Image (cartoon, rainbow over all chains, first blue to last red; front, side):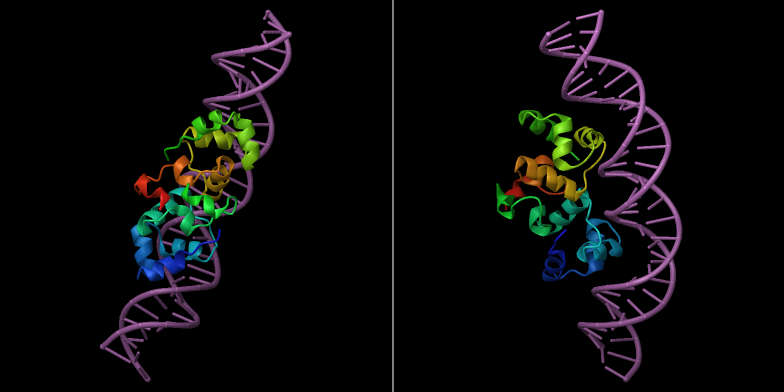
Length: 72
Length: 72
DNA sequence: TAAAAATGTAAGGCGCACCTTACATGTAAG
DNA sequence: CTTACATGTAAGGTGCGCCTTACATTTTTA
């Protein structure tokens, strides 16, 4: 799953540990998601989206659908 | 995870088996998701969103974020 | 340069998403 | 009534998302 989570996190001035605490997972989970080792669950993706106040599709690209359709 | 998948599916004239085939899972997976027994993975949620050409947040409500923010 | 903070890797465990198979129920058509 | 179809439930198995602990590496700060 292609993601720009790492860029968003650093732009927000958050460490991996900061973000992990905010979304209620371990730092390992953040590392795995940022480095494409794991896809997050939908609920976790939603918690991440809430931190940045962005639609989920902006943070995790939907490979099955045109990104232009994100804002319908 | 609150969802209106069942309504969307029936409005589209799809059976559970139809939808399951389109998104590449078993019918059991569709039943479990429609009846809130399971949350879909992010990737599966994206495949479902692609079928209906809708943003994921429209099909599965993000309980951690205002729905108004879906279209940012 | 030394200490501290942030990032990264490794290994083993657990729960759940999804699987398959099988059977029960409701509904509509012949 | 019977056949067919859609839906639902049940039971057991597999893979992976997330866990914890521990240690190595890189970057920042004093």
